[in-house]
Length: 326
Image 1 (cartoon, helix red, strand yellow):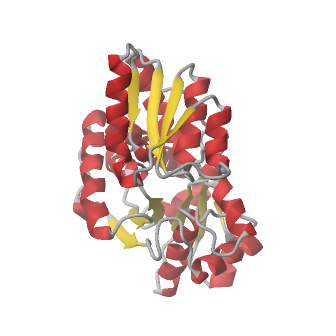
Image 2: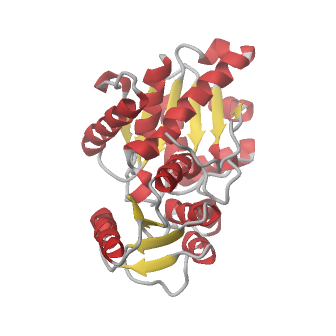
């Protein structure tokens, strides 16, 4: 599968000794996709490398995607398309706000066309397909990307990330000991592409890490089948065994709603900030750090690897405004 390089990889993997001390926990590690080096894309750059590769291989001249106004993926996709020489059209749920959030302002400045649909975010994927059909009828060559890049091709980005983690462990004796066997990788998930790809990649490299997915937008009973189905289709592209239900552990972190933090989330974000100087966003990171702390308090002593997915615009808003939505 062709890949259009965007990210600075591998992203760092390092220990969090001060947070460990504050929690009296076992070993805690952070995988720093917030330092991925492409715009404000965070982990979205991983999926976009493969999606752009596929779009260019198909001769596309415009990438079409969708998202909520605060979607990190929408801004990242627009910037990635521009860098790759493609036009980009972003279908946005709801109505135009008085002021564009950072993510959509980034998309606009990258030259993307923003189309506010007035629809709920759940309808955006079908609207993306319909808009692509209209563009094709007008003589364009569109490439459709659903919310979050949740396709088997997009999932390849995190299949490669699983291999990346395995290589980091193999090359670092200090990490390989504690993390090589019984570690728990905690990965927040919305559209499911990152988690599905990671499971496919984990199976491909034969890793024994447990995988804890933290669902931030949909109930656990809906996320599980979707992620495993997507992981299976990603594994087909890789030509490797498909993950099974036993490979996935899910935590429901939707709470008061997508991107809405609880008081506990705020306290945990503040704890990470004051112990390690790390910022977490309200949509993914706050829910993931809370999941890690809940695992520790429930008695988990195995090494925990928290995957930091990025989301810096939302992180800055979370610091500035109590109770902010992502």
